[in-house]
Image 1 (cartoon, helix red, strand yellow):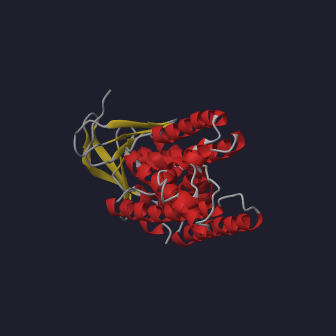
Image 2 (cartoon, rainbow, N blue to C red):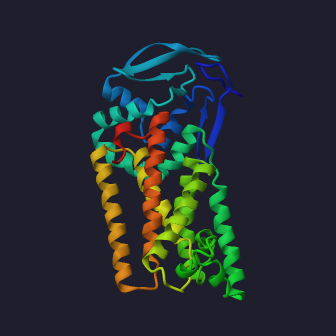
Image 3 (cartoon, rainbow, N blue to C red):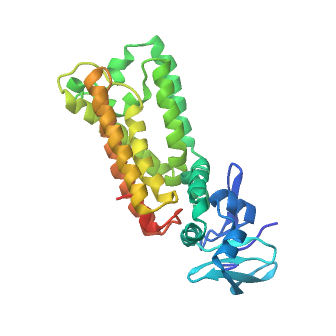
Length: 332
């Protein structure tokens, strides 16, 4: 049965991500949940929260097109609407307030909520909630292309000199700033980068959308290539590998994951700063002990990813996307 928005009276669109799903209004972006689905997505038991917070019940101004008058459950400015069928209607952006109320009255469950949110992939959950789609085809395509190129390059190792970044020849071969990310020196190199590409790329692509994800990937790969070349412009050794792009994904992931993960601003900012420092120190350490690893390429991609992550974060806050926690709780 097709259900309709109680506010706009337009057909709701079902958004699915694995076992999670919600019915979202394409116009006002409110969402209708079965109580169990809402609990699985957010970790909040509304019946428990209602009792603990002493929320009041009044007649809502909204009406379910099928079941009639809805019930407004509220405490101060925090509210949700309950259909006579038991389903829960949440206006766009109201999850923020529910998380704050939950943290206030269910302090003993905050850590469990945080852990549950991480297990369910906050970026992908936010993408589902926003109706941004549940597919990450570009991430899969990048992985598949790298696999094909790996097999082909085994038979033609001279390709490394053609498609890898050679600092001393970069002016004559600028395309290598992009193509180097598809080549890898052996299966282990490919699998390490491929694993992180899938783990970071899939949720980021779902959350950002294909166009912004493509921008993030290309910019990080180019920045990484430039960073590597800047370290020694006279080098004639080719640099290959998707780690420049993967480092950019990691930088953006740190920033954006903090936006949609429950927690207070100070704690999440501290975690992002610490993770950034660890990454930078690790790369500097690698550069000191192993000259064969393109650590400046990693740093270049990472810095680019962080900066673009901050740009995307600003646009998310401007559009008023519902985040898991206070809107002001994202880093920096």
